[in-house]
Image 1 (cartoon, rainbow, N blue to C red):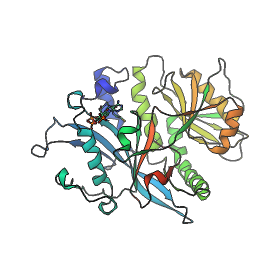
Image 2: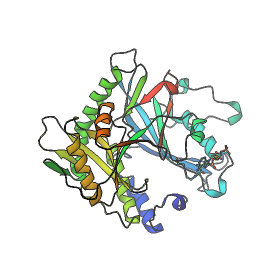
Image 3: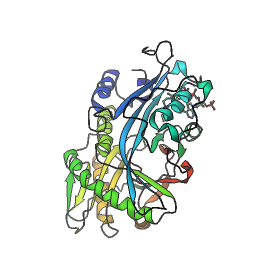
Image 4: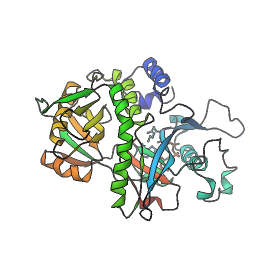
Amino acid sequence: MRNYASWNRGLDLDSYLKREKTVDIYEHAQNGKLRTWVLAPVDNPQTMDFFCACETFQRQALIHRSTSNGHRRVIAYGIAAVFCPQENRNKGYTTHMMRLLHYILAPVDTLDTFPTNWGSPPLQPSGLANASFSALWSVIGTEFYERLGWKAKEHVNTIWPCRETTEHLGRVTWLSEDDCEQLWEDDASYVEEKFLDSSRDESQTTCAFLPNNGLAAFQIRRVKTFLPGSPNLPIPTKWGVKLDDETEPAYATWITDINYSPASLTITRIRISEKAFPILLSAAMEAAKENGCNTVRIWSLDETLKKIAKTLGGSEEQDLECVPSLAWYEPEDTNDVKLFFNER
Ligand SMILES: CC(C)(COP(=O)(O)OP(=O)(O)OC[C@H]1O[C@@H](n2cnc3c(N)ncnc32)[C@H](O)[C@@H]1OP(=O)(O)O)[C@@H](O)C(=O)NCCC(=O)NCCS
């Protein structure tokens, strides 16, 4: 209710409140993975008139160090819905909440001693204080979060304007939301392999979130609940595509993305060879047009695919609308860590 004015994206209040109830019943939020945090006065911690709020989602992630051969599965957190009601803004409440959040998510011995002038440290409910890192995707630039410990990471999208008439090349199978869910289970193994391959060539420590356990699915569910507020954008029936004639799995899954103007069909997961890339792109263009989107956008395209993307008319954009930002709770400095795949 408090954040309706900021985040309604064209929904009326009733639909917005309904969406709030339905979007977080799925796997990405279940079994305590989603927690909502509020900053409240010490003498009235149960008040509903809290100062500000945010959400955290516990997630499976991978990290790799250049000094080791293997990688580790770790727990990390995605942070979302950072919000302060208008009447409480610019009083430092969100700043305080966010710096306390580190002391809830991270193992205590990885952080500086809790400053005495902040009062008592927050209680760490069981199942927390276990993060290797936390990440958020800032829509308010980099400065605010950087000073609170979340460092912006480079994030380059590749984009294409859609052609007027588009018809896909090659034989393809369109993917429903259920089809995508099955696919992401296998995709998680692929991400792990690819992560390891790419990390081996890196002198820096690397990390990534895995797309299964509801993470990639969350993107679709989130978008679906907002689309009724955008009359020109239907709810897609195609959320991805698989190429039929490839020997290796070849696919992409996507969302229609109203964060961008014009609306974009944004590919959030992709597995494709250079040779088959044009077929996949043609299918994405067709799905984009069908769903009211005038651009196709791919998050964090692989370096080898960027070359072929250019030959197919793709241009690169530094994404300033939604900047991935990391707080790192392992020994390295946050600036020395690379985020792969950008799973939001
Ligand atoms: C962003 C937000 C959470 C800040 O809350 P707050 O309690 O007012 O923040 P604080 O008082 O701790 O800090 C204020 C600082 O945030 C900065 N800030 C606030 N909104 C900002 C914005 N849209 N873009 C960039 N910086 C912003 C202010 O400029 C101020 O900086 P200063 O200290 O250098 O003057 C609040 O404005 C809000 O809820 N906005 C709408 C929702 C939103 O955009 N959330 C962020 C999602 S990533």
